[in-house]
Image 1: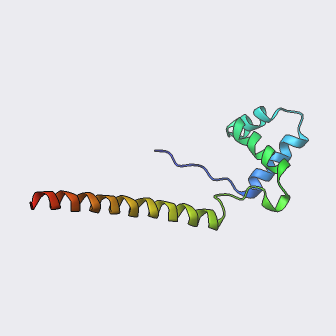
Image 2 (image 1 turned 180 degrees about the horizontal axis):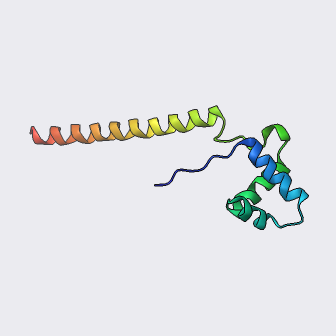
Image 3 (image 1 turned 120 degrees about the horizontal axis):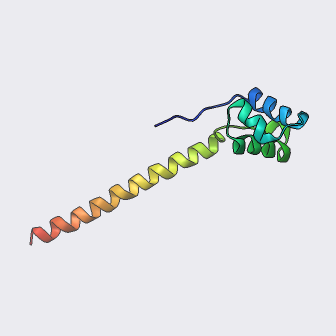
Length: 96
């Protein structure tokens, strides 16, 4: 299984700046840089629609990470609870 490549903020900004200042297409620049053209296009779109301080934020805000962790934990606890309910019913039937 391959791991995702992570690019620095400066690299992303330089790549987007290169697209804006060059006569070449974004796809050609992406190929020259060795990245997927869709990725470079997304970086350009993100930079155009978001304020400069929020561009390329990365892996999400801590609140989102915490929420995802809590949702996974809740799902696990629900599975455990349901299993224990089924086990209680099973053992109640077998003792009669």
